[in-house]
Length: 487
Image (cartoon, rainbow, N blue to C red; front, side):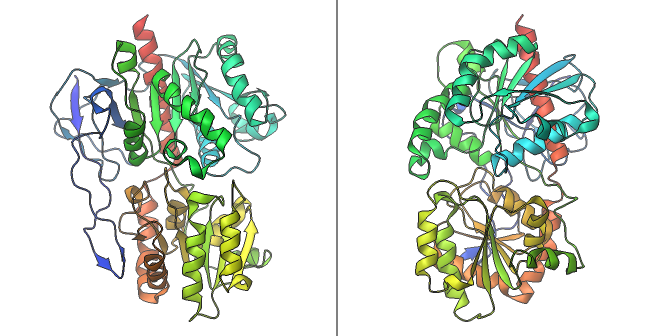
């Protein structure tokens, strides 16, 4: 039986409590569809952390989704109407036979961050799936085989380490050698988890789009990178059988910035978008009642409470200069408070350096650089406040991980973060230093801090990398089934 399913995206479950320039997330009004290109786009949110139990209008068997969204937060399907015949049929696991998937991990640096973390966790948890009909092949950079084989040593994970490591050579290799590699390895699906795919590959393609800032805000990125990706992102989206977006916000921006083209049936059909939010490793990111082990680890890198924590690649869109200015205001009447800035340098961190130098509190700003994995949860758990002041995000994984640790979180409105924080964080407008200052002060209040610390782990609990792997498995099966159905 085929069932139409439709629902609205839930963007927070507490309406509009506003205080002192910051607010808790406010539930969004119902949106009838994507703002641009929707007439040729099927959008399926399959990354819901908790699958709903079957209810009225939802039975076993394939799900047919008519250009529809499925709620990330509430995950409660309801019967929809067939407003057109552009439908995505999601087969149940096992319905398409064996699928060999190539996951391109060659862009992940030795110190993964952001999108790199997503690729590492996706590869790890795909390899752990008990799916005899899903074979995973990782395409890695030259000399990088050992790292990827160690992800799941008991799984017999296959790694092909043959891609050049530097970006220009790697991107050129993808287009020239990628199609040949897909044919040689006999894969059924190629997944490019970082915006691009080999456009002439002889197999169905899945591409992950993290955000659209390369198109919307080229000033936040290196010019050669923006010139290349401005052409390749639309081309990859047009060519892919399935586009995976990490948030509904990214899917909306994709529809606005890369409208689906009219024309051939292939161009229309190719625009299928699956929203799969990131997960959390709850074995690492969780509250710990005993602070001693964390404090010992942090002391070794010169970090001592009380402190406000920031963790991200240091680049223009992360809003670090605004945080430095807000911290300087808060620090004026909190002489024991420090600001810990953790994360490696990205492109153009000069504004952040200048902001620290001009803040008047430079001696109270601790720069740790890139943090090893074992230090990240400790930093979050013992923070008086964790602040993620991004101007724009495709997802904002550090904020979700901080919630899981029980840290009081202050972050920004207007992008993907509102989709997952619920009422467990304080939200301020991006770039508004006055509101950010008040939000930090409020998060430092013992009563408010306690409330947020209790809400955070519960809010983050449904988001798991296991669910992410299962959602991608379904995306791969769907891509493969489309190709097999066309034969």
